[in-house]
Length: 173
Length: 107
Image 1 (cartoon, rainbow over the protein chains, first blue to last red):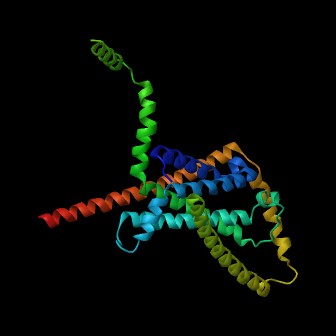
Image 2 (cartoon, rainbow over the protein chains, first blue to last red; image 1 turned 135 degrees about the horizontal axis):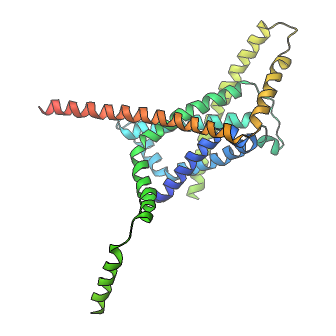
Image 3 (cartoon, chains in turn brown, cyan; image 1 turned 90 degrees about the vertical axis):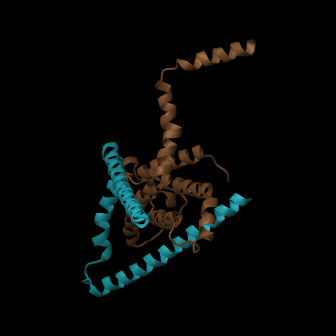
């Protein structure tokens, strides 16, 4: 799946914002929290599809070059995936709205609530590490696709029309 | 077709992880319930003692509040930012150590 950097950035920022909202169930209430988490899992799958080639490349070369930045990223990403899966699965097990919507009633142990809290705490920590490891990419692309276009709106445009005019006149000649 | 196959691979890995978590939790809770059966007094039924606080907890969580929720969002953002800054400092420190090592080798 070929995607542009801009599309990746938009998806990543959306996932980051959604993560913050989902991690705060008091903001949305339980029903939206649960349904947003279901949508979030689809966003994670899309994120993984966007980085599929990198995933395959690092997985196949995992044991060749042991001390590598990509390997560290891979390890963190794998742990992050496990933590997020645990959060979503335990959330589904203690769900009050999503499962009842499908007519499923589960009689589960109280340990799932503890697992849900532990896994969500772990995923917050891993998100911090994941963000730090991709910091250069995040900053450079935010500058390129968000900061620069926004700044260009407020910049005075004086030189450009003059250049255009001179080009036009030279063509006419 | 390729994308569907990739989605299936991702879902397979997710199901494997979920199965692991399920096995872990169910085994642990089995142990804890056995311990509770052995240790708890007979008149104190687990359902009465546990369901009351859980119900209050559930009621509290179900309602949305913008001010409390926004505070929670900021708290999560602060946690993520602090962890990111710590990792960036550690990375910078490692980079500087490697540079100084290189300089000493060159000398």
